[in-house]
Amino acid sequence: MRKGCLASLLALLPAVALAQGLGTWSLGAPMPSSRQEVGVGVVAGHVYVVAGFASGVSVNTVERYDAASDQ
Image (cartoon, rainbow, N blue to C red; front, side, top):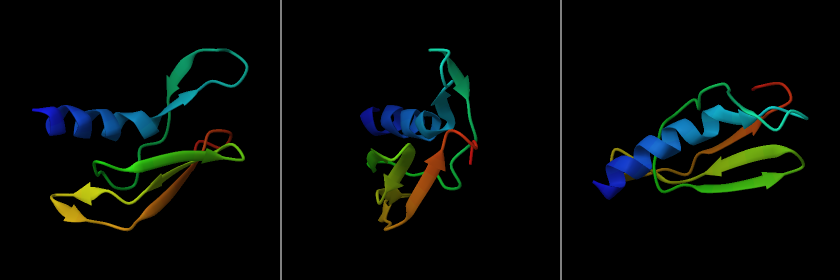
């Protein structure tokens, strides 16, 4: 159950972006691929999601999200 909850959270988390200057949350662009147990970091205003597992298989994908352009 823990992994199912975590996978659901991680699927939604990158799609949520803080509205700039408003202090509110809004739905942003979805991630291109879903996976769990990822690493996440923020550098220069970009959210990076790295590695993780997809369907039990280790992946080395890196994806970047830019809240300003919602991409």
